[in-house]
Image (cartoon, rainbow, N blue to C red; front, side, top):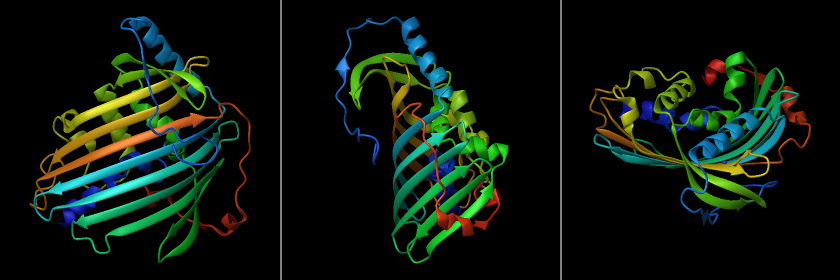
Length: 309
């Protein structure tokens, strides 16, 4: 089962790996949960108007200097055949970005459980903080039984692109090929358009390849008919009416992959399914703030980004 386990963890963490496994949860923003959507009369907005709302929101987000965000992400993976089993990951994150100073911070809690798959122990919780301070990234990680550890690494151009979680989550939506109006909703007191978006599959696969990092023996581009591994791919996109900024993004994906598609031929498994849900809320747009690095980070151990990518 070694091959399946080695493949499984990087695949599970693809959406998280952009920020070292960095969605509505904690202080500063209101937990969104289930938000009622007021339906819109059919044809109330033309396709051209919907495309303009979507285009304006992507452009306005790219021009922000400050914002904060919350992200919840759940990933449930089932392995069928061989040494079958299940792995579940629940994560909650909150963060902020000051793009003028090229600074950002993130706090994250991730809980993992595994059944079968040759794992022992079954459960694990990891919490960590990440700070980007211009040319350096600092990360505090705490794993039960291993204590707390601060590390730091220089920020390369490639790494700098990877650590913007909001850009990473909105990336698959660039050039959406389908836009529909679901209705309207109020998120954190702001009236929003609620759009259903259909991603451009070619751009989505390019995005996945960019997030892959250094997973030995596996490349998304090598999967035959890679776009067909998505049994479900749904994006609900909330855009503020007054400022046309992305306020909330909800994504639901069901990925089904055979061992052959994954490039595994040792009979360790037959089929892998991943049910992925992500809920990201943004707030405090262009409200200036500064980020201070904790004193404990001064003794951080320097490492290479190759440890993660």
